[in-house]
Length: 390
Ligand SMILES: *Cc1c(COP(=O)(O)O)cnc(C)c1O
Image (cartoon, helix red, strand yellow):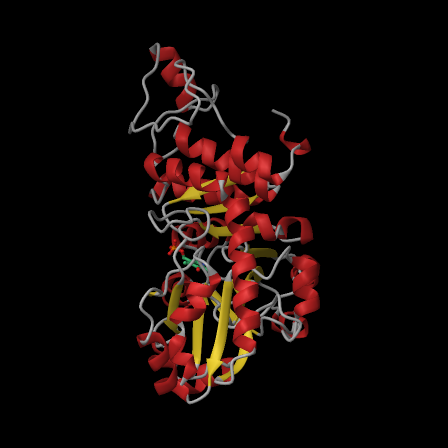
């Protein structure tokens, strides 16, 4: 299959499919830890890399390879390396790309565990991180040191949906010899393709929209072979690889990703518009709304505003908790990218470990609620936000 000529919908369904000797139509799940060889000579050829083929599922597995090829086709990447979780992808990326003494420039608006990884894990190995504004490109330039090797961002950010200008930040990175990694979890390749905009590496938590139904954990690192050589080496040696079972779930998830992202986006836009009209809502954060400060950039960079909507309720934390506690259908959880709509109070959950001052500086107020809009009827989601009525 010449994957370059197909549309994303087609790639999502077809790319990467490999059939076994049985001619199955749906992808097979290869639940095997190791692979056997025809002869001692073949085993030797495989082990020294003279002959391609599977050896052991910590290195490669056919179900995982199918997922990697399908996601690579969607992101327009030369290579995809699947991992056990989104965090395993970020860990493998930094361990594969950086060495002691290197420096990271990162957006201040990152997933909490990513910040923990940078501040508490890789710092022990001599890698320092400077945090800069997600939106101010001049801050990225100003933070560069001679040893800066990696820029890291996530756009739209959680929970305020700030948009980082991928092309502009990629240009700064290129200029100083650093790689730009973009965590594309919120958009997926259906809505945003960072490699086309100059990013070097794309990270996914497949746990979210790629599964789409809240079942299993997984992740991926994508880019060109040269940049990912160390990433694959790290993964193969240390083992945070994706299981064949999870790869099979994600293959099935990718097949409906376009349909789901379109539906999540349409529901989120409708809900965001409705929230803007509610008297008890002080502010709505959604890139698809013209009121979003970076609406124009968002619409240039992404196909839609995505599925995440945040809003600030008048009356602070008590009012926000009242709205959350009055729901009967929405799931009170910090997870996202599920068919089911989820709701959470960012200040006391995902951002609870950050000091109140830092939270205030980041704009995460006590009245802020984040909704990851699912696939239910919007009128039912609106109805479940009955607490907004006062
Ligand atoms: C969830 C998430 C991660 C981490 O993924 P896991 O699969 O939970 O390890 C990383 N980045 C973003 C933006 C996320 O939402």
